[in-house]
Image (cartoon, rainbow, N blue to C red; front, side):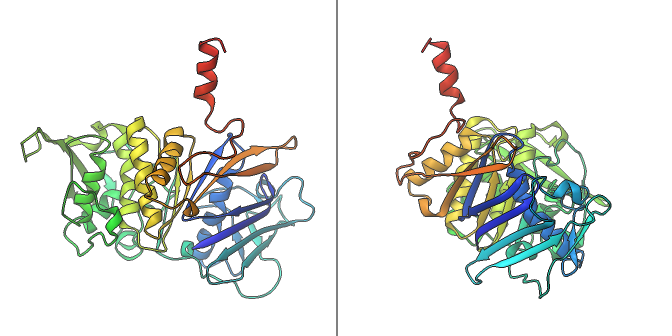
Length: 372
């Protein structure tokens, strides 16, 4: 479990320090540095997976694209060194430093200093998932990638699109010994611990009576959806995934990632609320909190008050301990440098240090409408 992250001289982060919990929620203004926190882990992972991290930092593909060194280095940096400093439960801290001296010409930043790189972090392992804001949806055929799915157990290889979710469900859903091992994650509506059955149960919180099936067609996988009527065990029809609402497609990879995760896993998820109605967002927040209480680590970037309030409700109902939850509100100063403020929440889910911009727009708009 990663307990702290320090970022220096990277993009809008001049000196940012975040204490991380089992679930860390990043929210705040646009272009204030939230995605850059997630990119810290993605850059380290993609450089490691290419076998280059011992030599330096690869700024582009397949997880994220930064550009060249000039795009990565903070404009007010006192030197040319980008620093990522991480702590976990087993180390006193690991400092990753990279030299951006040739920042105008190169997208590979050589390592700064000497010494071996410690890779004792979950984002270097297969116990990791990244799902971006641009998740795949509305497609009829999903790709097959046997190595990524069957060996590395990944839902995405390229930019967190979740493009391998159909292959993942086809391989692990009900035909393999891949039962859900964490009791807190089991949905009460079904006794089955099979991954596919649990995914369906949680997706039914978003779209009632939904059913899901996978089908292999040549070198592709299709997802078939259907709906049951009350008392009818057979789906009424089969609906191609491109004809299903985006909320179901966008949320599917997130639900699969959480339910298939093991304790100690790290999940990076952007905008879990995308295309979901408010109840679905609240239920998604509940599932994320249950995962955090089960020893899974999640870093979530969101603009949803329903996700935020769902976390607060989970604290109130003791589904997750408040000590396991960290919330940061991101803003910028006059030089457009990141300011990250930790939001404190009581054991009853109340915000103890409300600040302007923290999911207060509904109240502001209501005050204006009633003339206050």
